[in-house]
Image 1 (cartoon, rainbow, N blue to C red):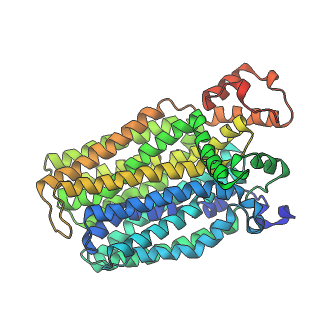
Image 2 (cartoon, rainbow, N blue to C red):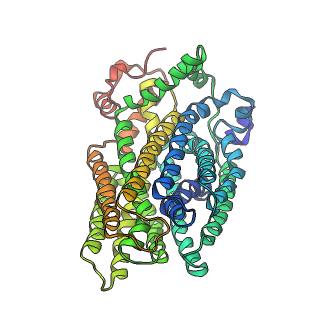
Image 3 (cartoon, one colour):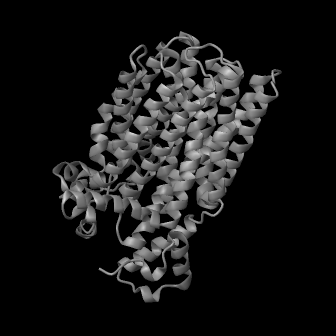
Length: 503
């Protein structure tokens, strides 16, 4: 009966269906881009908050979001036990209820309220978006086992994300130009527009995607989890152990570090870039938004990177993307330090274009790698735990971003940053420029160094997937090809004789 349910019915993965899946990243890419680029600026310019107060709101909400991510990973994996999960899907139920709740995004952009209003509204939106995005991130793993089909889905998602990132930076710039850059109204109009897009996009995704029904075999493996056995305390401890067990997978540890360093670096850049343009270079908010809107190039980058992912693998994309970003960060810093004034906007557009090429590659690659990580876990544990892995990624990233955001706020305040001010002191300007180069650049460099040793790609993943299929059909571990055993160990960090445990 479950298989007759539309949510459990596989369909052909077309380009349009891929776009229907990927449109949810208007929430992930669009809302986070707007928040990263303008939230702290909005708080310090129109809400009478200091940089530390604004950063504390963002940081606290990210911590709550991170904790919610941990809980959601186990909840979505085990939601099949409920009637709602059986009817609407253990992943899709959260998309269905998340759609109308996206309209709460509007409440973030109302000016003139007090600290606790902004604290509450931002906290609520972060938790709701996390509760929806964790199940969403498991869908490629649910919809197909094929590397190329998963890449098609992830590429569509990243294409949408690139478009969302462009609109999230371009539209505010146009609203500043029309309504004035010294008014909070453009932020409210922008927030309302995107909230409507978010709500529609999430419902579209719910309608056009599907997930695997939980078979008796899958249920039996899931029931073995310690989180499903014993008293509450034991279950909670089992949940923590489950999350910790994901770090046993070598490729996931590397993937997690690459993801954390690079995305936290990107978010740090977004947080300070408007400050850098306005206070360090003396440009307008409109120019800052227009420079960020060069993220439009991400639409092209996503298409090219999709082919590169299949032909050259993620390591090559990491090297190109991170290398470009590091070079362009140095160029931004030199424009400030050398006090460049001649053709400065033209120079900045050139720098920003290449930075956005690198950034788009940064955003594309980790989420194209992620759908293949649970397969490495499956050959080690015989379990399908995509929700757990998505939760760990979300928890760790949001925790580090919370720390980074709070750190930016403290650095600005401790270097004389003045709220509601048209100009800033030279000390504050140098602090902003230093965060841009050494904060963002340092994190990107760490990601690059870790990426140089990353070995998961189409070829190695296919070897693991074929071995899983062989073992599922009753094949003996004793008959393994030595090259396959070596690949499994390289990717998982676990000796072949310890994978695929006996029942």
